[in-house]
Image (cartoon, rainbow, N blue to C red; front, side):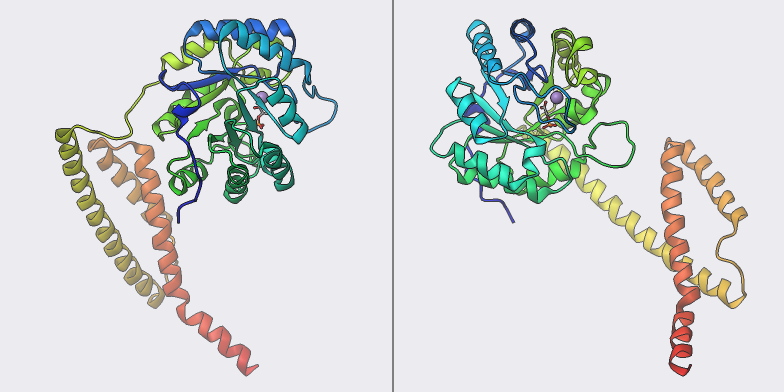
Length: 375
Ligand code: PEP
Ligand code: MN
């Protein structure tokens, strides 16, 4: 099933000539000087297509800096007039939409906390009716693809066709190296449902840590995402919000310079033929691997039956150690990494144990049921 979104290409509303497409700017507009000076440095890099800045900040806890408010729109106007950079801000209410449009903001985005609330998204969508402005929709804070799709549909139904999705990761209770888990599968799923919907990655909010931004950016580009939104501040060490994840404009250039740009598809027939040939070799080998794994499992079942008949435990630690040692040595000689081989063997072993347990207990479940009916 594909999503029915009426979308115009990214090129129709933002300069995509510079590769990769980068939207950059501070997490929050703090002072006129901070915003305008950051904008000048970003414009001078020649690598940035639009200037972002949070004017109204949705904060998880009260008492934190909640954004400078409408006055920041005037600063954005000045930044745009002096640098020529189009501007982008987050909107979370109908009033924000009206004020941003009145101030000539070029691109609006819906933040992760807003996307999670259909009432909020609908209010924004209603305020956008009859307006021709590009809107980017961040994924919701929770890993729920339907909420993300629902928000895109509501905005699109309001007549907004200059639409993009922003992948900024999802909150998770598990401890992790990232502020928000990327959960790439969810973003890829959306891409397969809406192949024409541009997707922009936000490595700043995924990582929460400037040292990991390059790594996530590369991964996003390798997954054929169309652009990056990266928080950049003239002096991140004194930023009022998200200090740990912001980079200086010079830091931004360094990140971009280290990114490898790979092509999503190949147009060259010779390259295509060679790729097709290699892929068919891989397909054949994969079939063989699966066939051999199935044979291994059949033998495991036989062993299970034999152990059952002779009252032997399923797991024999010595035997497992022996498999692990012999196979990792062999695999190393064939240039497979020890870590990979261990993982693969563990996976095979745990499935064998599951099969053997099934064989061992096949009759027991029946006997237990018998006991119950005869009790
Ligand atoms: C932001 O872009 O500064 C922001 C608040 O992001 P998110 O909505 O992804 O948390
Ligand atoms: Mn931020």
